[in-house]
Image (tube, rainbow, N blue to C red):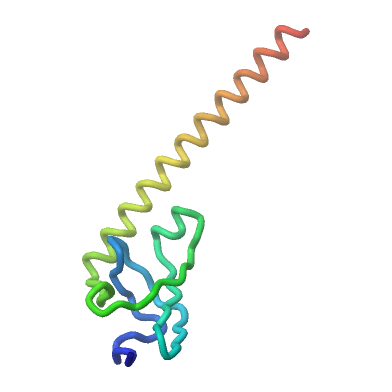
Amino acid sequence: MTIPTWLVKGTWIEFAFSVGRIVDIAESPERIMILVESPKGIWRNHPAEWIEYAQGAIQLATPERIARDFELYRAHLAQMLAALDAMELEAAAQTLFEMRQAG
């Protein structure tokens, strides 16, 4: 299998309903593996992942698609932060309540 000319480090690609930036490429006679950093990976706490290159399944990402993913995962992270903040407030309120009960 030959590596396409556009498949190089730093290229933004679209794959499996996501976009990411190529960090590294590993080639063997059987397959081409690509290390990709992605907004989805950051959201999932796995910023980089190895994916296997399959012609047609991985393509160049458009600027619009890249922007859409950043917007989507930024919104997911904001929701997670809001949930974490709410949980912290609940914990603080519970601790204060328990301290008042004890003392």
